[in-house]
Length: 285
Image (cartoon, rainbow, N blue to C red; front, side, top):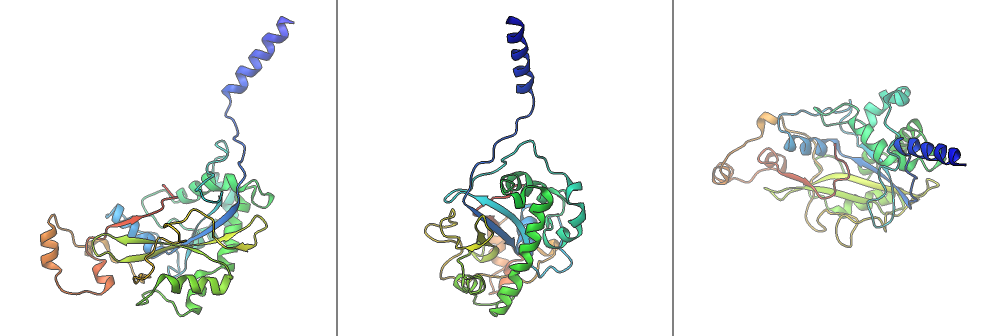
């Protein structure tokens, strides 16, 4: 009997030394998030001013940020299986498409860092659905949805194009809702110097059967609303990214004000002291 006890003890000790697979928690909704590459680039260059951006061939197309299984009212779950590491070989058949529709804009970070992060944080949770239970399936679904819910086309059909003036958040919401018949969530970022607001991301929600649903009930970006964009102030949908060597820097706010005391177009203002923050940082690379 004691021999069996020792064997059982040793087996338990071996098992405990092995990596454990975390069980996938249940979740309520899938949030499909697309980003505007120009604003992502501005955000990146503000963080690391000497870095450049890697745009897809058509930089006027919205790109995928991720597919996020989410429990209502939270940013959970995440990293559901710590042993299921990203393997680039698994997505080799679709890598060219991913570089077009799901690229990492942030040059200077690993080319695959966005895919790695999205799979390990969100994909391993989405894998509780048979249709998303592999890297290939997860990323293929994103490619399918970015074509079905093409935000460049949706906004363009509503008369909203990059560089549009006098744009309000309700214009964006109405355009997406007119196409999907569901409420989206919209995120902006703010230039702390000029107080201008820039369109960053639009989120579309789906249920576990991949049917479109309202994003109502997800963790809100601002109290009571599915956006952190101002409700009455203009927001900017930027059309160009200035070269980093045109960004004016000064050690003195007084110098900045002295050299910039004339009214400027929004994109010209963006060339000076762009200080961008993201209110919700679901991606850390």
